[in-house]
Amino acid sequence: MLQPILLSIAGLVLLAIGGELLVRGSVGIARKLNVSNLFTGLVIVGAATSMPEMVASVEAALLGSSELAWGNVVGSNISNTLLILGVSALVMPIVLTGAGKRDAVIALVASLVLWAITAAQVGSVWVGAALLAGIVAYVYWRYFHPRPSELAGADEEEEAVLAIHWAALAFLGGLVLLVGGGNLLVTGAIDIARLFNISETVIGLTIVAIGTSLPELAASVAAALRGKPGLALGNVLGSNIYNILLIGGVTMMVAPVPVPASLLDYQLVLLAASALALLVLLATAKQIGRVVGAALVMIFAVNAAMALSA
Image 1 (tube, rainbow, N blue to C red):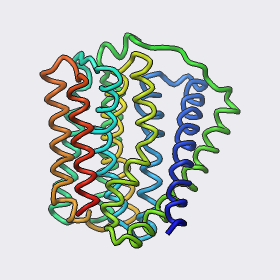
Image 2 (cartoon, helix red, strand yellow):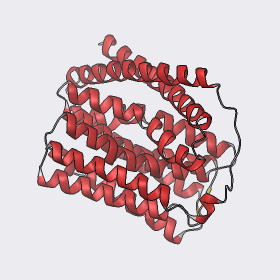
Image 3 (cartoon, rainbow, N blue to C red):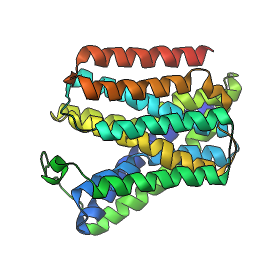
Image 4 (tube, rainbow, N blue to C red):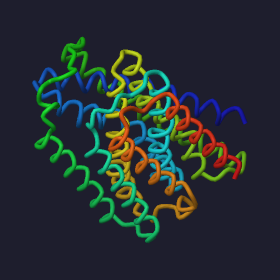
C-alpha cells in the first residue's frame, strides 16, 4: 500500500522541480536569443508550465490508461479555474481591466470542442491533428494580433536571467525530471486506483490533475503575492487553452481512442460552466474578489470530494 503512495509523492516532487527548472531555462534561452517578451510569455512559458500535464497524460496514454490521461486534462483545467484562480484571488483580489476576454472566449470554445468530441465518441489521429492545428492557429493569432497594452510593455519587469549555458542545463535537467516524475506519478496513481478500487478517470481528475497543476499554482500565487494578481489570470487562461489543444492533441495522437464517456456525467459540464463563468466575470465585473475566490475554491473542493466518493 505504501509503495504506490510514495511513488506518487516522488513523482509530484520531481514534476514540481522539473517544471520550475524548465520554465527558468526556457525563459533564459528565449531572452538570450532576443525573442520578444510577448512570445516568451505566450509560447515558451505557456508551453513549459504545461509540460507536467503533458508528460503525465502522454505517459498514461502510452501505458494504455486513456481514462487517466483525459481525466488529467479535464481535471487540470478545472483546477486552474477554480482552485488556482480562487486561491490567487484570496491572496490578492484580481482587478479586471478588460484584458483576457479574447483568450477566455478561446478557452470556452476549446472546452465545448472537447465536450463535442467526447459526446460523439470519436477518437483518431486526425482529431488529435485538428486540436494541434488549433493551438498553432491560436499562437499565430495572439502573436501577430496583440492588444495595444501588450505592445506598450506595461507592467514589465526585468528579472535575473540565467547565462545561456546554465539556461540550457536547466532546460535539459527540467525535461529529464519531468519525464521521470511523470512516469512515477502515473505508475503510482494507477496502482492507487487499483488498490482502492477507484476509477483511473477519477484519479486523473483529482490527484494527478492537482499535482501537475503545481507549477501554475506556484506561479499564480507568487504573482499575487508580488502585487500582480493580473498575471495569475493570464496564467490560468493560457494553461487552459494549452491543456485542451496541445496536450489533448498530443494525447489523442499517441492513443487515438475516444475520450472516456464517463467525463460527460458532470465533469465536462463543470469544465464548460467554469469557462463560461470566467468569461462572464471578465466581461461584467471589475474584479475577482476574495468572496468569489472563496466560492471558487469551495466548488473545487466539493467537486473533488464528490468525484472521490463516487
